[in-house]
Image (cartoon, rainbow, N blue to C red; front, side):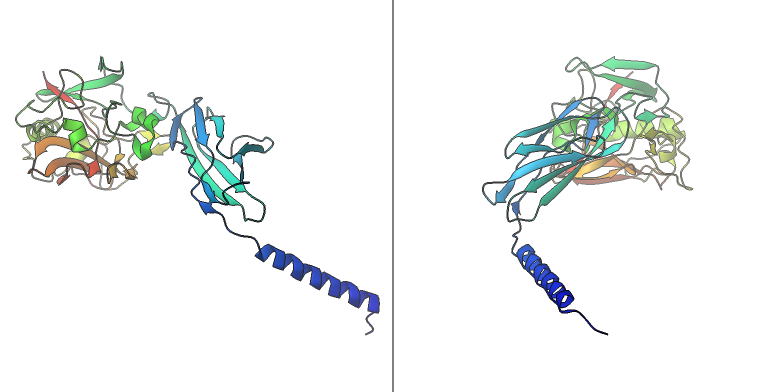
Length: 336
């Protein structure tokens, strides 16, 4: 088989060109820095978000940033370093991706994707399947309304406290507080004051006239739900069935299906799996599988009690932890 000299030169040229391109590509450098645009993980539909561009430290100049998202088709929008990117959360309940890309001559692109879940903070919006309680109160501090329910000798919040003055929303997203309430350390919840006796808890972060429940308040709830005495320092066998439910969040069950749990919610206490925070609200876990609730009763000077729920467990066990290590939900109570 004869190979023409022209074909040989052409093939050799292509090899040299490919090698040159490969060598040029290898000469590119990697950027350094942290592009955290601080986009909330949960945001109310139709509200505006501000993403903070920047974060690349190497190279120190000449970096250009642009944005793409998963819900709009538009021309790429360029933003110079240090500027802001504005966008509006769509009206559809879904999880969207917003991607920041840094570009600089001689460097590989650096990409930072963020995820924002659109929510509607009212019954029938993001939350579907909860019975709407008949009674409610308004917190004079911020004009938020809370559904309430009579259980045993106490009146309980039928949803988690969402007082903005303390604590944090799940994953640091304030808007998520409208769905599952805020997460508080024990000191944030109680103001650092312990409680005991029926209705004897401190006001803490609760509205005027309400208190953070004591161990005795929790025992009264368990007896009213099950018809049996349940000392606080027991696992409350089967009591979790009476407070968990089949409600959904953006179409997903708050409590995944389990063959071990009835999800009865017979008293309308409406427990939602709001998860928890750790390390002074720097880490979050357990959303849509766990719920944790503070007691205002101390175990000792460094620790306090709580109760928790898990979707695959029909009980309502107790635990204790450092007062300022974890962030849990708060249910406010008062005597009838």
